[in-house]
Length: 290
Length: 159
Ligand SMILES: C[S@@+](CC[C@H](N)C(=O)[O-])C[C@H]1O[C@@H](n2cnc3c(N)ncnc32)[C@H](O)[C@@H]1O
Image 1 (cartoon, chains in turn cyan, red):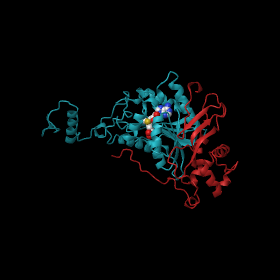
Image 2 (tube, chains in turn orange, blue; image 1 turned 120 degrees about the vertical axis):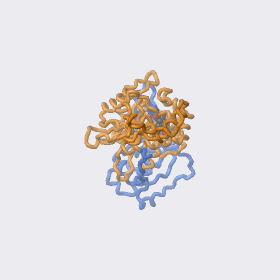
Image 3 (cartoon, chains in turn blue, purple; image 1 turned 45 degrees about the vertical axis):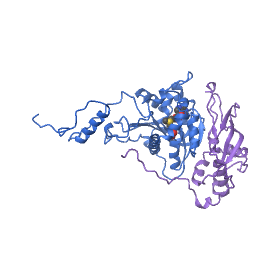
Image 4 (tube, chains in turn brown, red; image 1 turned 90 degrees about the vertical axis):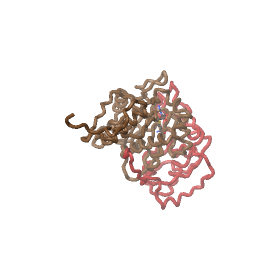
């Protein structure tokens, strides 16, 4: 598990091999699809059937764009990796593609977009991949140009994988300075695997409809790490933020139960740990007098 | 598992007005296999982002290859776009691409005319620049377009 941002610049990391891998993995496709669906939900476009003009920032192979098409919208996709865009061409996506670097600012006419999304791309700006790269300048160029090209009241929903708290604050800070209102929505905050962060930004000053929506799974219901059977080894998914608030320990009255204990022991065995054998005593409640 | 299973509404799907749809029978080359596309819609949105350029719009078009593609007609989208499009730039670009059919000026009242809507639709969505270049109106810098993808990456000294 690694963070691709730390491996190489995006246009190098997303080479032909990686681009091909990207769309041949059903897990990556699933994740991109789910993230995009959620981003669209957070974009709250009017439900009037009118196709909107959207921008997909870091559109890559077009997995996210395909969801936009599926919802009936027209889109433009921007990406810095030619290999990823080639895959998008092969997949015959419906949006127009642009080879470009969001860190250089978006060369798009003011006020024209009905909305923007970005799936797992913006954290790349926090890296200095070339000697001429200064993350702060690139973040500033990106957010101020994004603000300009969105129509008033339009939203941008950017799903990000910040490396740590400082990076999250940095990204959010530049968004706010550009004039956006909004904040970060965290889905499944208590699960290291399913936790997802979305920067939900509205163009213009705060108002009633700029309040940041609630994340999913906030109540901690059925979203502990233990019960997630799908392990997302997807490199872009892990989060190494050590300052994340400690997971809430949720123990219901009956305790974890025998099944849970057996499953846990089995997991540990698979990891090669020495685990006592299962017996009729396993997970039995102790007598009160004990 | 209920994780992010949102339901997909297809209400927005490009279907458009049935009545008008039957009118759109443009003779398009059906044997074009490529899916390379850069619509004039995109041209109408892009501007030169080079440092120091005050007005990078509209980019001039240098045509090497144009393709036409049939796209479903959607009157709602056209109406949404009409107010965003820079008309003069679209009409000129359309002429450059070999379709000199758009009026020089347009106002919202024209949206009532089927003839106008179809020309607008064709110019905005069905004419594609496959190979060529977009040229910055101020500096003359060329942004190459290959396989329908404009390369808008700036050099270090242009940022
Ligand atoms: C995790 S992938 C997302 C792929 C995309 N959503 C899809 O459906 O295929 C992140 C993408 O961000 C792009 N990217 C990274 N840095 C970028 C930059 N500075 N400008 C534009 N795109 C960038 C990468 O090239 C990569 O395709």
